[in-house]
Structure formats: structure tokens, C-alpha cells
Amino acid sequence: MEIVTYEILFDVLRKILTKRGMDVAEIKELTYYVLNFFGYGDYVVDNILTSADRHVFNTLEELGILRTIEDEVTVSRGKLWRIHYWTYRKENIEEILEEEEKDEGENPEELYKRLFEDEEE
Image 1: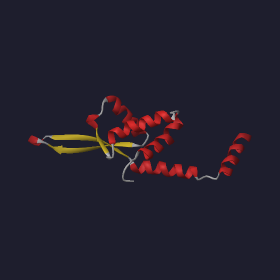
Image 2: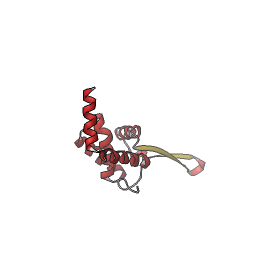
Image 3: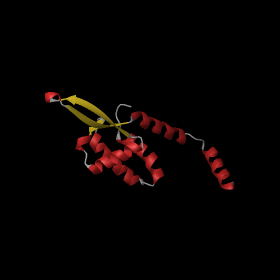
Image 4: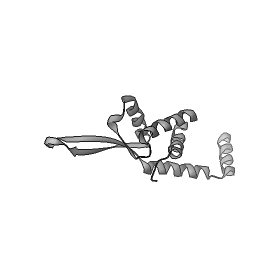
């Protein structure tokens, strides 16, 4: 996956967050919110985020969608400057998308059979 598009991010967030009680409108809003920072890029510099933005990003990190990375640059007089970035966890995003495809590929008859078996128990 080269670029995390709106469709990809929305599908991943929908899969995770609908289980936690978020409705589709809120998930769409969150998807646009995150993409406004990333655009077509893969990382965001942490120091542009407000504390509210950082809270959202931390939550997405807990969900396995984002991660932080650190880079060190030597500036004048030998001082070390640390730059913190947020980036997508593309490997996790791909796994979540693949899980969804497997779920959708399930035979409907088997699903109904399981549902009725659960009710009988």
C-alpha cells in the first residue's frame, strides 16, 4: 500500500470503531480530520498538533492505526534536536482490511446456521 486513501482509512476505522459504538457519520468526520493532517503523505510532524489533536492521535495509536517515530538532528554548536513524527502503521491497516475481506467472504448459510445455533443454546 503506497498511499492511505480516504476509502482505506474509513474502512479500517469503521471496522474498529463501530464495534465501540461510533456511528458512521462520526467515523467519516474522524477520517477527514486525520487526512487533513496527512494528506497524501505518510507522516506528520508532532509539533504542529494541539493537545486535542495529539489526544486523537494517541487514541489511534492505541488502536494500531498510527505510531510515533523519532529522528535526531545535530544543529549548531553540536546540540541534538529531536523531531517526533506520526506515521501510519500500514502493516496493521492491511491486516485489518484483509480480515474484513475474509469476514465478508463467509457463506451466508453458515452464518445463519451459527446464529440459530447460538440462540438455541
